[in-house]
Length: 146
Image (cartoon, rainbow, N blue to C red; front, side, top):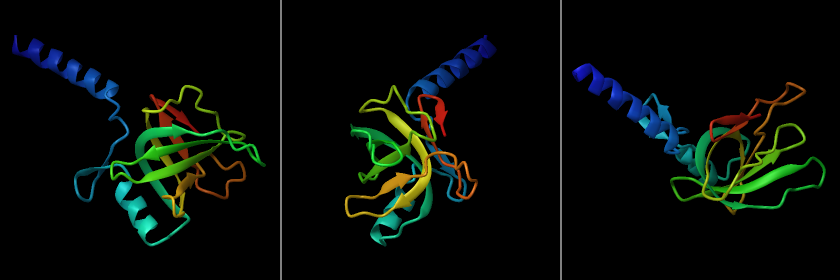
């Protein structure tokens, strides 16, 4: 009987965790705490530092029109747990567009932070066909876009 309760509880936990939108939170192994990238991005913002490779997650607060000048980019604003917002600029000539993206969605990212007075932007969220830059990605609803 106890084994059946344990298995049922385990299954429920996995189902709740995978559908809760918390799947992108990563563990900072040096401190044992969850990290959404806010601290590193906040530090780069305060020191006006650019070209910093960052990983994090946040909530989409606004979807902007695509940038069609030169390489095409899907653009949207993400709010981090800290409250800071960043612009995500995702090259859709090199990586797939996130067609199902909506305001309120949770999104994970790995890319390069560039400082701006508005909070900064994250770009290079895709592979580099030339192999000269670290490959980035976006994670949305269990799918990785790179």
